[in-house]
Amino acid sequence: MSNNETIIASAAITKKTIVEENVTLTISKDAAEVLAVVLGSIGGDPTYSYRKYTDSMHKALQKAGFTSYNPYDRTGSPRRRITGSLSFKEGFAIKATTDGSRVRF
Image (cartoon, rainbow, N blue to C red):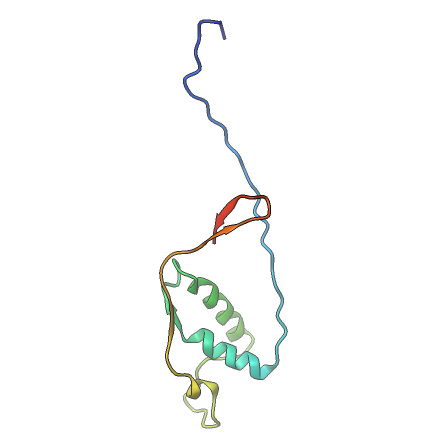
């Protein structure tokens, strides 16, 4: 570059590695049944709201054999005791990370 040239623009690509942290939760079978019922009762957009996380947890409990509804259960299932509802609005929060950056989750 000569002394007469002026830089009009420049660009750089920055790549960041996001490390996902996992949590292992150990609960009783009764608690798992209640949790499956609660998670199965949550509404909202399954892609663009926090429900995508609750759906993931609910599917894991179903895979482990805990269902959120059994129409033949006459033993006082937690499903028969739940009232009201919970529904997530579309959108996500911004979370600050330890390095000072912010990520949408």
